Image 1 (cartoon, helix red, strand yellow):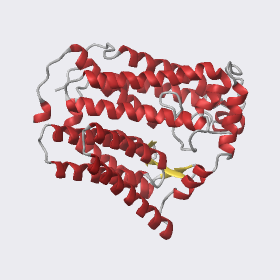
Image 2 (cartoon, helix red, strand yellow):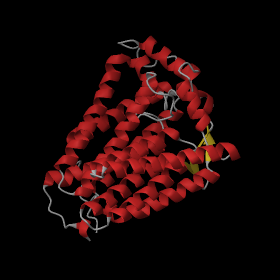
Image 3 (cartoon, one colour):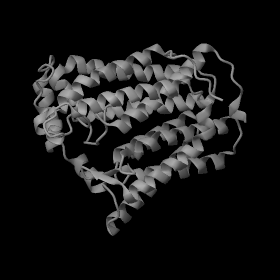
Image 4 (cartoon, helix red, strand yellow):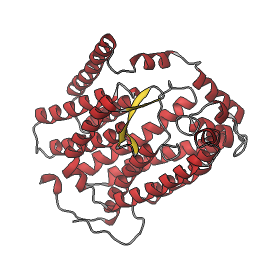
Length: 377
């Protein structure tokens, strides 16, 4: 049974501070970056996306608070169910998903809300793989069965995400590979796992191209080869224009020529308005986030907490680095948002949920709570 305590923010104070600062910073950035798009979309109201962001941030704080008081052992018990639900939602998205900007990544729920199911699957798969690796570490499952479970769940998730969201599929696969490496899976089995997943994705890509199934392989390849596309050119121009000190809040012009300034390219817009000095601080925040996440994992004595914390930390940090890499033209255009800063409720809520779990691990560790050995149940 869950015991909800009085409202008090517990756990790693540095993580709390970083997330809160990024969220607060997102308010003026999203308001400015989305002003022109909001004017067109909301028929003259330039604050439409601002209020959506503010309400999203309030909801995110509620999610973080609830998640940070729910014992992480809860996810160990139900992770296989979460993974099954996530894969089912990915199937529904592939068949009946809503398409935006040429990608079918969203699932419309009864005409009320749209969710990006790949974000849900990312966290669910990390929870599931962490559980299996924990059971393997405790000798509660044999190696062959463990690898079969992990391989099936990973292959299904990656292949279902890949047709509409190549970058998320690649990030997720990279995280699982690192978790397996940390879980001391022998290199020969790790290489076999990689070849299996990559091989099946390649087969799907060729079959999808031949029979006109849903896929964005050609889109991904074109982005990989194209370093001078309109999106990249606008982002580079915004960064050059911003320079070290920036043009000042509200003075950016990227929003007038590019509708994705408040989500997929918010970092480039941040450089334009606030300059490289503040953008470098944002980068530093995510480096510190990475350090604190690994520190929390290393301080925990529970193998599930270790695998789960590392996986969720990598998920947020990888997403942020990919977003910033795209903005400065180090990586091809991917459509990844900047965690806690970009507009986009699904990503904001899921990343907040992940942070809440990490904070719960740090909270239990800092309190030196001796819990029952749930991993052996």
